Image (cartoon, rainbow, N blue to C red; front, side):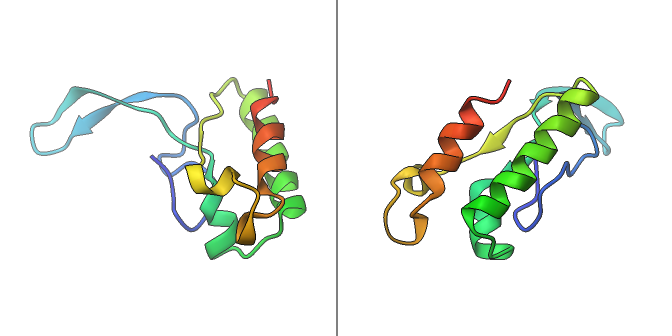
Length: 100
């Protein structure tokens, strides 16, 4: 669960939670994993270059770890090819994988 056009946690939490069915007023078995960001957000919505995106990704990661959350994110397979409009993004992906 996350936003397409912004970074941050749509459900205001960085820890997995069970989806709540409002109509049945009960917790379901669907475990939702919130995401901190999506690769395409920086390119299509925020129009940020890789270096600025890395700064934001790193800051998000530090905040999530500070509060004991999980740092989940979404990358699409075409964004890591380092060609065309994705030039420079493969390095950001690889740096993200090294975050602990």
